[in-house]
Image (cartoon, rainbow, N blue to C red):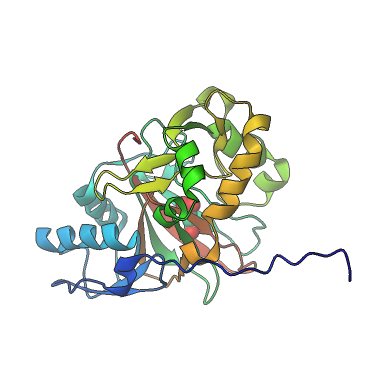
Length: 304
Ligand code: SIN
C-alpha cells in the first residue's frame, strides 16, 4: 500500500427546491440550469416589460438567484432604465466608467489579454458597508464557447454546514477588505500590462466593512454564507493568521460543485444575480478571443 489516502467519499445529496419547480410565469419562461442555482429566461423584452413582468422577474431572481435573460437588444440608456426599475444603480468606484454613462463599467477582454476581471469566487463589493444587492451584465460580444459565469448558492453552503459549526459561527462577523481584494494582486505590473479591464484602486480608497458570516436575506429570511477568499480578511477580533484555518475551510466548502451552476453567454443576453445569497466567478478559458460586457451594480442594504 502506498502512503496516499484517497479522499473519495459520498457527497450529501442536496438541492435548491425551486430549481425543480419553476413557477409558471405569465410574461416569460424559466428553465433552471442545475439543481442548485441559475435559470435561463426567454420571451421577455426588457425595453417594453410591464410592471407586472418586472415583478415576475424579481420573483424568478428570488427563486433561482441568478438569471440569464436571452435575446435582448439594449443601448446603454435602456440597460440603465431597466436597472432603475429594480433599484438604484450607482457608479462603481473601482474602475473607469463608460463615457457618458457613469452607472456602466465596461468589462472587456481582448484576444491578447492574459488576465480576466472577476476570475475568483466572490460576492460583489462585500467590502462596502452596504454592498450592491444585484449585479447585471449585458453581453455585447462573447466567444463561441468559454467565458461562462459560474454561480454558487450560499443558502445551500450555509445550510449544509454541520450543526456545531453553524452554532459556532452564528452571530460572528468577518472583516471584508478592499485592500485584500484589490491591493496587491490588482496592482501587479504583469497584470496591469496584460489585462484590458483592470481595477483602479489606491490605498486612499481603502475601505473595509464588518458583516455577519451568515447574512439573512431580507426577502426570503434564509441565511446565506457570506465569506470569500477575494475580500474576507479575518473574523472580527481575530488576526488573519488565527482566522485563516477556518476561513479556508469555509471557502472550500462554499464552492463545492453541488452548490454551483454555470450560465452560458450569447450576444444579447443579460445576466442578473443576487449578491446576498450567491457568489460568482468569471471563467477565463478563452485566450485569443474577445468578450465585452456592460456591468451595472444596484444598491443594496447593510447585511444583517
Ligand atoms: C464580475 O465579477 O462582476 C464579472 C463576472 C463576469 O465577467 O463573468
